[in-house]
Image 1 (cartoon, helix red, strand yellow):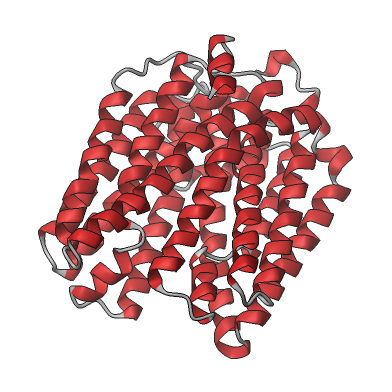
Image 2 (cartoon, rainbow, N blue to C red):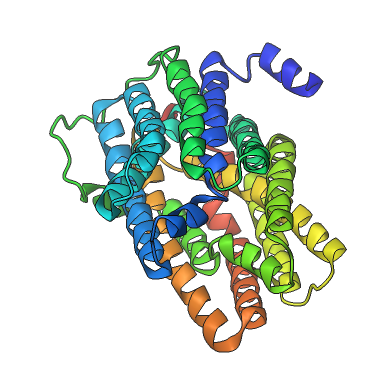
Length: 409
């Protein structure tokens, strides 16, 4: 805490960066309160496993594609804050909507509203963070934000467990309670002020898929980096498979959620130090190291069978996340023009969402046909090869993130 206080006083963490981090913190408390109980709640109101899969797939596709469109729109208008505010507002409102009715079409609407909110805000929010700092401090800033975001993701499930201990099976009220931290996050956005208004020069409203044209104007460095990140996404299946791996070992639901909370706590505590380290050692080195750690975790999950081994793997998994999530965003924003920041982020986020759906489908197929061990080894091997690719593209891709000219920022 003393380290964070000194960083804030030094001016590295601006008022806007701190406010955005607090917004993410409170939003994730509400969202992650529902994460462990969402599948159980949907089953309790009559949703089949197939219908749950369709719901989540449609919702995530909505989030992914809207990240691209609204990121592009943010750059076109030169605005960040309205997208951040409205996006978090939609996500907050979706929570009590989920509990209002049990009709399938209503649940689809409410869940899609939540994911649409995420799509509206994400690219503009990350671009705002990028606008507030310099290339040599991107790791610290994104790490600082991820620390707050993930701390909320750890607190949320803890509160859910506490609530369900006293009110087992009372899921609807939990959705209403989760609305409260969401409202706090929205209120904080009204203290944000627009700072950078750099328009792309084209006042015409973009088409929904126009962000895809960014591939024609993106630099070669960006294309090489995105190719590696998307390859990683293709092998990085949903975290649900890690939790299923715990269930396969005979672990109880409570213990499984406990491991998930532990992972988020490690992630939250390590994110900021990892960002500081990334700025010192190089964003590229930190990213590659994070992918290698991911590979170790997934291969290890194929062979672990006792609690301490799972504990060690989830500890490493938290370190992996802290070394890659914010660092990848820092790299992207360092190798694109300032006026294209949200578009560059949105282009990647949109494609990554599609690749994530493919990845989870492929992982599920391998799990079903060959077993969990084969799935974990397949993912771990694929990510290790991706780390090798990123290492070999170092000279062409990463130097621009170190020697980025101030005139382009």
